[in-house]
Length: 260
Image 1 (cartoon, rainbow, N blue to C red):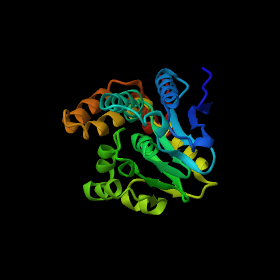
Image 2: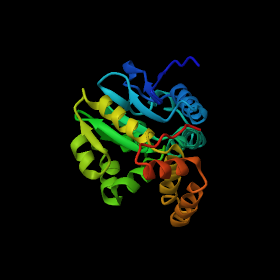
Image 3: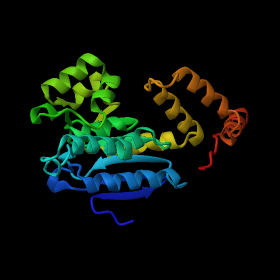
Image 4: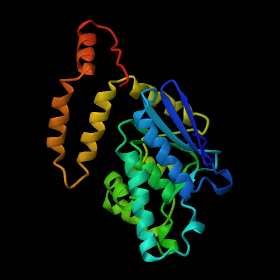
């Protein structure tokens, strides 16, 4: 499919999705969200895709928020629908992706951009990254899961501070908070992300998906995370990946997992 606002590149089983609106600092508008939905959805059924890296074009911004001009005159119902659709179609889809999703954060990750990064399973940022939630300066709050995912990741006190003050933090502070997995130079950002994703997709794809489901279950009040883990663990014993992994271990060789 020909996208207008994102660029997709598939190489060595890694799908790189670049949000490409540099004149708008890659701000999220309706079309961009729709394209992200399609790209992430298609990746789930593509056997060639082992993992996904999300990033923004240029060096200034990952995603510097949502495109405010699109919803400046929204009503209460329209605002609720905006948040619901965004969560359902994009942010929750990323968080629950069967394929691992890594955010390569270059520059600003603000508002909806930070929420996009939070929905990813892993976050790596360049040392010039700035992260924050400016919504309360607009009379809003984060609406794409930011109040929940940030709190789950860094704790209530720090999440309250970031959201209520609307102050940005730099990459090193974000790393110390536990918001980021790694911080690199701008030049090493993508190589570092690719190296980590290459490691991940060399592992069992069925086990990777099971691990994502089990970890996510612990953050859903409707689930017993321990029971989900037990069920997912048990299911692993019936997979070809388990047979291959065990045989490779006993034969003292590297396992060769097939993409389903």
